[in-house]
Length: 405
Image (cartoon, rainbow, N blue to C red; front, side, top):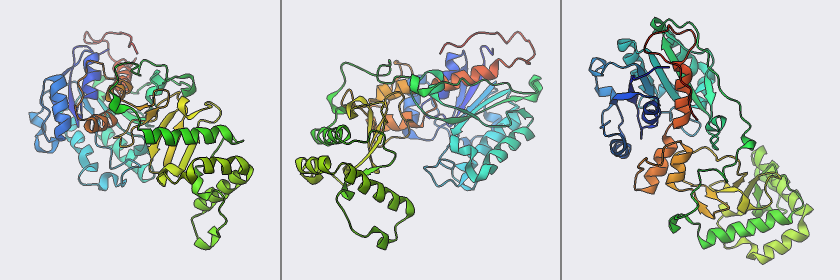
């Protein structure tokens, strides 16, 4: 296991890599970030200023280091973005900033992180470009991308990411042997985990009276219909409708949802008619609040047992075993049992930051920063896998120690 090493933290964000490497005994000698809010958070927690655009610094001016860490910008590859990849001149090509530093310093180790879609982007060509570019610099990496999610380490969050590990051939390694645990997400329990704060939660995180009314309405609905496993979005505005949807030339998926919703109504007509009357035909609901996605199957009997989210596509209800992936959140998920939204401290815990971590005082920025951050324990685990490769030469700088997760 590498000990007392030096690392650099590129595209550092709020320091997920920094925290992980620090936990393993590393010292940061250089950090780079351009987001002014992330820079302030980084400075407050780590006492160093990462306010450097990596494009503006010459590689020879970067201090000597043992490990290069980089969560290079993922917008160019994410399904949520335009997926331009290396054609994205403002973000995609930042990978080549990593290459020039590795080429100059022949850094012994690197750890890179990106969204899972990186592997599928451009029919796999993007991954091949990355893999071959690193090999050309004499790095040993895995042939297939490494996919890992926090839930595989016992952290109740589904967040699949690509982690690219590499060792320079000069270290004497010929192949990487990386083990990733396999864990059944349904055996985890977010609701009863140490993630949740149970006291002294600011009332501002509690749902509004209107939101509680909407959720009570849908709670009554899901308890009243015959079906308990529903594999399609429920659209209340399609109940008791008989217009000719085929004349509208709708996409097939939309026609399919209309057919299924009309059938759901017919199967439960007596109950649904009474339900609609009681709730004023959902006249007080927004269009998106009239859409409902029950993704709990038979695992929950009430929306208040689940994890909830008010999304543009409707109200989504998920089983509480694991939390959905933290992203740069706009629609903050609701913990049904608590009748409130996830707090920034809980978001920090889901990303494995310690409770001593100081997050941005602006909630919007805090959620965004944790959503963009790497998961600390994931990086710590993968780094340990990298640093303990069995065919490394036995030097005094290496010791074997277990990683506590």
